[in-house]
Structures are given as structure tokens and as C-alpha cells.
Amino acid sequence: MESFLNMLGQIGAGSLVTIKLFMVTLLFALPLGLAMAFCRVSSYRVVNGIANTYIWVLRGTPLMLQILFVYYGLPMIFPKLGEPGILPGFTAAALAFSLNYAAYFAEIFRGGIQSISKGQYEGAKVLGLTYPQTMRRIILPQVVKRVLPPLTNEVITLVKDTALVYVVAINDLLRVATNIVSRDFIIVPFLVAAVFYLVMTSVLTFLLQRLEKRYAVYDD
Amino acid sequence: MPCTMINARDLHKAFAKVEVLKGVFLQVTQGEVVAVIGPSGSGKSTLLRCLNHLETIDRGTIDIEGETLVATDETGVARYVKEADVRRICRKMGMVFQHFNLFSHLTVMQNIIEAPMIVKKMKKSEIMPRAEALLHKVGLWAKRDDYPSRLSGGQKQRVAIARALAMEPEIMLFDEPTSALDPELTGEVLRTIRALAEEHMTMVVVTHEMSFARDVANRVVFMDGGEIIEEGTPSTFFSSPKEDRTRAFLGI
Image 1: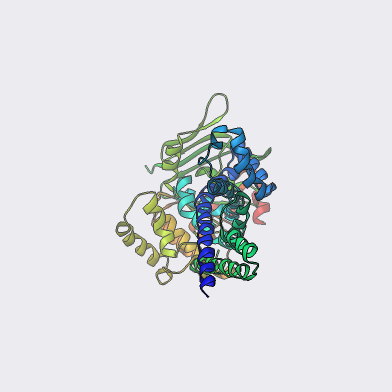
Image 2: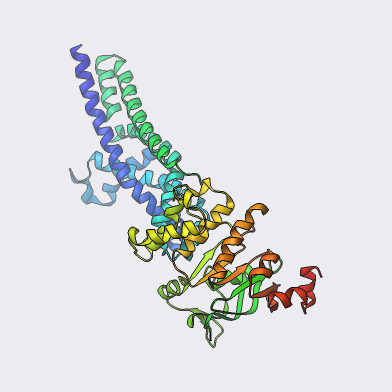
């Protein structure tokens, strides 16, 4: 019993690392994704090209490779980063995750922005709203409603993707569980880890569905 | 002497080499109701959309209440005034669209007060009396807290009219306001527009409703192939059109 509680404690600590990585990624990837989405719909060729290339590379290569590249590759290009403590595993992972998820979020936001009819822009324009005012007050609130379902999907995938950080030796939920399994030759930690993941994804699903319901007061 | 509200001269506009406006002249004086009619593709909607900068013209001049919106220099290039001025000048014109373009995430009341609050920086308490009066006027006070998706087409269009009027425009532009409506719903919208005409609102109405053009307009403008073919008072225009194309269009 005591060892079970002990194990729960360890796995709980691991899940805190997972949650932290999840939150940090959302914190950076959502705004960066939105910015990239605006670049994607921009009429400036250069801006457009930068965003396209960014999304092409980040979506077209494995996240695992990106994590390894940031962790091992960046310090080779910028030797200063190689000094101990400057680019710890967690920072490297958070950076890779943010950049990667921003690419996916950008495409979701772009789809949302482009799904709003031209009439909404024109309706705002003839009333005298500027483009930024139109975006903030008219377009984006409607985009949020439309992107919530795909965003929910992506956010839940992110919870599970965090398990990839074992490659840079971070003691996240899965790595802690794996360590106990190989040390004690028991399978229970995997089951406990599964329950922890399920709890996290369930809470997220619940929260996002509530948000979706709040937006259901109007139809397009 | 009533002043000239819209003075558009020699408007040219092409979409990807297709000439949609081929030198259109339109003058509208204060309190006048001008009905623009013509077959689809004749350029009447484009003309309207050029007046308030939803489309940019290639060549020509547009003055709104004596202020230049766009003029053409010696090289033949249309030059618009500064963006802020374009927005200020165009705010004198309210517009109602064929497909309403109500903001779907806002209630009827929010649709009406949004622009006065954002653009004119009015406080909610300042705009509410006017918004309430407008909703009573278009007969939709009871629907103030509904979202547009809950309204019929005719109700949507009346909200759109109220929304435009909330900005206190001096000119109203209507782009086929009843074309997307079921026949039994056009009446309520036309009555609302007619009530505006009786208040001497200056209006340009692109329409397919001949009876409306005949009864409400002071002047009828017939367009075909990107040109104004003929114009006149409704009585002379409909009873004795001069041009063959007009007669063909009217079926007489």
C-alpha cells in the first residue's frame, strides 16, 4: 500500500511536468499560430511566403525530430547555447512544441478566418469600422466558434504528444512510469499513467465542450 | 437650391478586363430617391458599390456632398483621398445589402449599437434611445434580443436598415434589398424604405421591383452593358421610354 502511494506520488510529480509543458506550449503556440494565420491570409507576398514555408516545414517533419534538433542541433549552430544550463531539456522541448503546434493552430485559424463570408467584412466596412476593428469585434469572435471543435482535437493530441519528451530526458508522466516499470517489474504504473492521461484529456474535453455550448447560442 | 449629395462622373471599372462600368455619370440631389434598374450584369450593383468604396474605380470622379472621394489625374489614374478621409466620407452613406450581412454573433440590438459604439465612440447610454426608436420604427422591438439566425429574411433586412440608420447617414444605398426575399416578405421591407423616402432621406436603390421604382422613386435610371441608357421621372420613363433597349427591358 505504502509503495503504491509512493508510486502515485512519483507519477503525480511526473504529470505536473507534463501539465507544465502543456500549458507553456499553449501559451506560446496559440498567439504564434494566430499571427501565422494572419500572415497566411495576408496579401503581402513576402509575409505570405514566410508563413507558408514555416507551416510547410513544421508540419512536414516529425515533432520528435524537431525536439532533437532544438536540443542537440541548436547548440551546435549557436555554441553559446551548448553551455550547461542555458538550454535545458524542458526549455528545448517547450520551444519545439510551441513552434510545432503553432503551425497546426495557424492552419486551423486560417481555415476559420477564411470561412467567414465576405459579407461580414463589407457589413463592417460600410458602417465605418477599420480593418483591425472588424477583425477584433466582428471576425475573430465568429472564428472562435468555428475553430473550437478542431482546436479541441489538437489540444487533446498535445496532451498525449508531451510523452515524446522522454528523448531529452525529462521526467514527465510517461517517463516516470516507465522507470518504475523497469525497476520493479510491475505493469501497474502504466495503468496509473493511462488513468492520469485520461483524467487530463477528460477535463480538457469537458471544459472545451462547455465553451462550445456557450457559443451555441447563435447559428451562423 | 437643394445641394448635390452624390456627383459621380465618367466612372470606369473593369474586373479582369471585363468592363463593368463604361463611363457612368450619376448625380443625386438632397432628398432625391433614385431607382437604378436594369438586367443582371448591367453594372448597377457595381455602380452602387463604387460610390461607397466597396469597389475601387479605375477612372472617373466621385464627390460626396461636395467632398472629393476620388479624382482622376492627367495620366488617367484614379486617385483616392487618404484612407481616413475615405472612411469619413463613406460614413455619410449607409448601405443595405441583398444578403443583409448582419453580424451573426450579435443580437439584433447589438448589431445596431455596435458601430456607433466602436466607430463613433458613443456610450451605450447615448446610443440606446436612438437604437430603441429605430427598432420600434422598423417594427422589431420584440426581437431585440434575438440572434439574426432566428429572424425571417424580411426581419433581417429591416434590422439591416435600422443598423445603417443608427450611424445617422445622410445618404442610403440599397443594393437589391428585396432580391433575396420570398415574395410575401418584400412588402414589409419596401414599406420601410418608402417610409424613409417620406422623411426625404436621400436614397439610391438598385432594384428589380418595378412597382416600387414607379411609386417611390423621383427618378429612374436604366442601365445596360455598363452604361446608363436612359433616365427620367417614373411617369415618363415607364409610360414613354425613348430607347429601344429600355422598351425591350420593360417589355413594351
